[in-house]
Amino acid sequence: MNPTSRRRFIRYGIVSAVVAALGVVSAYSLTGRHESSPSAPRLPPGQYESSTLQVLHVGGVPAINTADWVFEVYGEVKNPLKMNWDQFLKLPKTTDVSDFHCVTGWTKLDNRWEGVRFEEIVKLAHLTAKAKFATIECYGEPFYTTSLPLEGLLRDDVLFAYGLNGEPLAPHHGGPLRLVVPEKYAYKSAKWVRRVKFTERQELGFWESGGYSNTADPWTDDRYG
Ligand SMILES: Nc1nc2c(c(=O)[nH]1)N[C@H]1C(S)=C(S)[C@@H](COP(=O)(O)O)O[C@H]1N2
Ligand SMILES: [Mo]
Image (cartoon, rainbow, N blue to C red; front, top):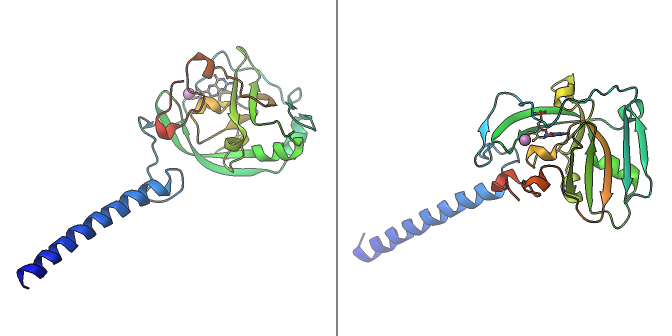
């Protein structure tokens, strides 16, 4: 190899190495953490892995008898809903395995939730054109609420869950029915769901009005509002 072609060869080598490195970096960021790509990180920034779901809530566990339980959907809907437990159990059932990230730092991977997609409720309630957000209102004291934009709630992994890992959802985990929103910090995953209110503007939930982020995105370390 003469000196000129060797120089060209080396330059070519460096350029391809840089191109390859950029390719790896962009493939990494494009895969998205939550898609099940083998190279995708499972833990969001600042989170540690916990072997269990840690029981966490304000107030006590409300005593809810499924015989008295009602689920209501109101606000910006053309067809308000009021369902009892048996009626809710007849809705199309789905199972989804997802990770659960608490803003205090723990993440429990691979929780198998069983229940009804949020989307099923939307289909039944027929939203008005104004509906852009939903507030989830819970049983129990103090009155716990949280709210989310509709787009985030229509994802396939957002469920009203009544089962966890093959068992009925235990009261301390939000049974008989809780919301599960895997792509947000867990204070959006309201336990003991009672009502869903569709709104034009977003209402601030319990922790959100106490200084926690309203967007609550674990992947951007978006903890405080
Ligand atoms: N109704 C209600 N839902 C709630 C809470 C609460 O205080 N009340 N706490 C949230 C928070 S901060 C977390 S981390 C999860 C905890 O769910 P787990 O106890 O099933 O692990 O519930 C969320 N849902
Ligand atoms: Mo949490």
